Image (cartoon, rainbow over all chains, first blue to last red; front, top):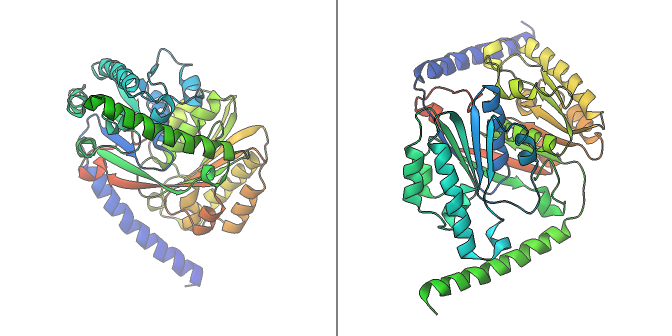
Length: 203
Length: 203
């Protein structure tokens, strides 16, 4: 056998073993219910990954609810885009800015409480397949919301509804309650090396 | 001063210092050019974050190109959704499946080479603001493509075009070339604990 044929044969054998393992795992995984996902960590992609899930859910014909707990100064591309589909996406920007921009703790708390009231409506609506709670973790980290009530409201949602909560510093109890948790770690960041935040990438 | 007024005052002082630091960093970051982003790691969110960037870019009126180097058996929600906008999104699914599904190395290589030819067209088109190279990292990891040529083609793209490459096992030279790299780390995964992959979340 030539060297490349040998390599191809080894590749095939390795991949056959891998396929058997993966097929077995998939066969074992049969439960279907609404998942709670948490995206946390200091790297990029926590919110954009949630908005990718919105696109995915819309592709599958689901309705989606979005509550943004923190709004930056710039209007975001995702907001502009998903507002094109008012029948399919219920989009709510409830926060005013990062807490170091607003500088007023009581005002931040009031905004977070109002945002949670909106989130609760979405979490009570079985016609909504996915609820995005963007930057919820920040509001929890600063104790703007009561963690136990938030967990109870999420836990009481319709059986097949998915929820994704984003933001740095997700509290341990939220991670404990979640089905899937991803820690976005920053390996390298253009912004740190003097590059301006840019439309389409950062907002 | 009451205890809560004191806490509010401390919060305000801390946030004022934080705002000054962040404003200074933003003022220093003035360069504007197309970024190369890499999403890698074993956690969820690598592709969905790229698709969130697609939504963001469309919200800012950009045109977007997508090449998927690996296609799972199930048709994906993001494909169904973004194909609704043929004027704005040039969407190409070029791969056939994970390599453990196809079991044929030469066939995988041929598909990857064809996918790269399509990617090159997008990387030569200055009207496209964002190019998504979904699962490119896997094709590179398996040496289906010549890494140096890939890096040269990416490096030669139009000045303001952003590129995002996703997939586990991004090679060190790609990470070196990137402006922003996020490692999606798996903290917890529902699939591992026996939950079926679900529409809107996993695909």
